[in-house]
Amino acid sequence: DIQMTQSPSSLSASVGDRVTITCRASEIIRTYLNWYQQRPGKAPKLLIYEASTLQSGVPSRFSGSGSGTDFTLTISSLQPEDFATYYCQQSYTNPRTFGPGTKVDI
Amino acid sequence: QVQLVQSGAEVRKPGASVKVSCKASGYRFTGYYIHWVRQVPGQGLEWMGWIYPNTGETNYRQKFQGRVTMTRDLSDSTVYMELSGLRSDDTAIFYCARDSVQWGLMYNFEYWGQGTLVAVSS
Image (cartoon, rainbow over the protein chains, first blue to last red):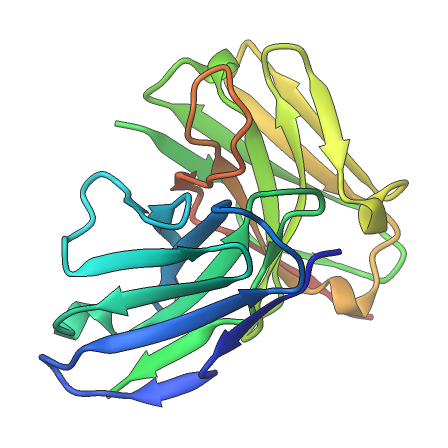
């Protein structure tokens, strides 16, 4: 199985901050990397697919980059509704696997 | 609008089975793969497998092979996930999630159900 790691596991930030979360795959996955946001008690929400394509309706302050094994999710100016846990997921090969998550709090 | 509505919380004893439903609306049911994802409370996400409602074809993660069965009811636009041989470490929230591309398998989980908590306890 491809192992996904994320760093940091948690971070504290303020409204307006620029936040960067890193995801690393144990094998090359080209750009088959998705990002999800999960608020407490809610289902995950797809933010970015194929490493850098913004899902319809997602604010442009979210962006993704990377290829191969190293990827980043950036929130350019953190908003109150962005405090949540973020997961990366590889869509390259079975079994599809998720990272352990990065919790963003105040 | 696309909606996936899941059945309510369940409590089971170890060794029992549970069947969770996921009713789809707002799109062509047969056109999109439906995946199941598990989340142990307070922990991460685990993809379990998919079902293609158009044909009934399924693909399960190896660790669940022999314990999970995914089916669909075309008359009701509903998919089901049944997990047998339940253990205490199966206690989790189970989500159904629709793939993003019609007639395609992308493993981009675009729409999610609200989740179903299954608690396993003696």
